[in-house]
Length: 375
Image (cartoon, rainbow, N blue to C red; front, side):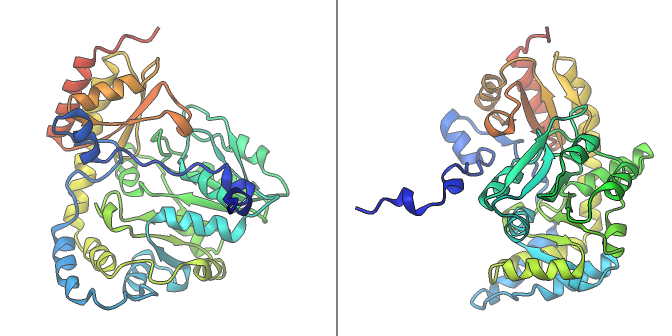
């Protein structure tokens, strides 16, 4: 008999797999009631109608392999961002690009640095590459940039900054990131994960806040890789289209690690059409802002500490174990994301902002749960 354990490297044996938010059909089978999903930060309106039509049109060519270089979408993004196409790499969602970054730049004896209570994929891709992840304690539910700088050493190759941060919804202002990058050693690449940038940009305009200089870093060829995705504001989560922008030479190395035909023809067609529908994007970010203004005080009134959000979800500290509350919500037809296990916040849950009707349904279910006040 083959001893498979001996064939798998020790760091892979310890690796935990990514566990996504509960699927709608699974929750409905468990609870026996119709549910709405407010757990995975998806666009409650779905994709642009233009994207739907583009997908339908593209089905006639699905017998052919997709364009491996995703050239049309690359060119369009380069035009929008005013950068060279060689500075862009499109992958099957930004999570796949995180894996490529880690496999390219990390390995045994090296490390990456990020914050505790940040995106759950960072430890997975780092450990899968055989490297060590250093997690710095949070500051006001977000990133402590001074703490991260102090944790960087000669073996650090990556720093992950999610801005806004998932799951807490906090941001770091652009000036603070400017100063952080100026002090970071030259051997460290900063991954500036802006998956929720569309929502943050809208909030920033409302609040008079300087949110992001990310594209300035790219144009200046600084050691920064910016991640974006079509999964959130554009509503294409099921198609898996994301991209990174950074120094051309570095992106070229990442391209060598990209599996062939990673982005589907349907995904590219939908993403191109989504970029052309400014009205759908505006509808999504405006609805999100209204939902945040409704939900934040309403949740707080029930004795739950709410972290003000810059994204399309709200992070909620219950003050006690939150899993039972999440189960109660599911039994009342609302799926939210408990922050248990590898997230590291068993007293918290994250709820995605939905349509006005979904938000009201969530608040009704939460009231019925009778959450005790914080002690």
